[in-house]
Image (spheres, rainbow, N blue to C red):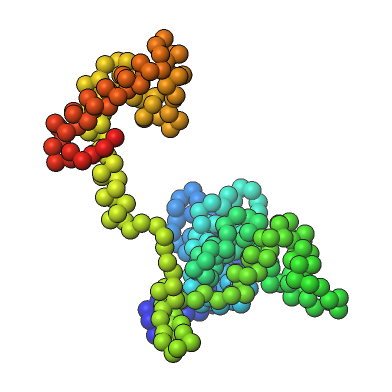
Length: 289
């Protein structure tokens, strides 16, 4: 038996043997922990409520996760409750702690029940933890319902969309499958499931290489643009470097010259750019704008 399993069993045995607390004892321990940080008071307060942790954890045993792990998570919630509890509100600690214990166990289940996340919003959590119960309750009625009608009734009861119910139902119905699970072909050959997952995205080294090249070209172009006059630069930017290239006619109207003159200036500017680029990067002579 592992050390963690031994510790959990010891925790359960200690919880069973721990005496119940009166309201006054509970209040006194909570005050001592909150005001004096009395570790012994915290230990006695939490130990007396471990029965509550075990009780809440047992309600979730149908999710197939180790009960010991859920008890341990519930203990974390119990400690969180002790840290936040305000004795002056005259509320029983068990009433306050139950919410934190349940929330901690539910978060653990959502994180570990499946590799496919079931949602983290309050409505999605409610759907996750109540779907099976409501489905069993509605299915037990004599009235025959289609899946669509069943999903709609559950959606109305919880206050979510019908599509959310259908999606969650599919997640709860289908077990996780390993990508390394073998798949046999008709000819008898076998392969892993992951062999059939083809990504159209470029490889990471291609992405990095492309990013580095684009950055270098940007630096070279920025340096080469400095050889242009103000009017040449304006024409090149609006004609070649903007997403929607301006027309010769619109640029001519804006600059007060003919569109033929704009074409001539653009042609001369492009030659100057090519010359500047080849002088600064002779090994990139084939680089084209």
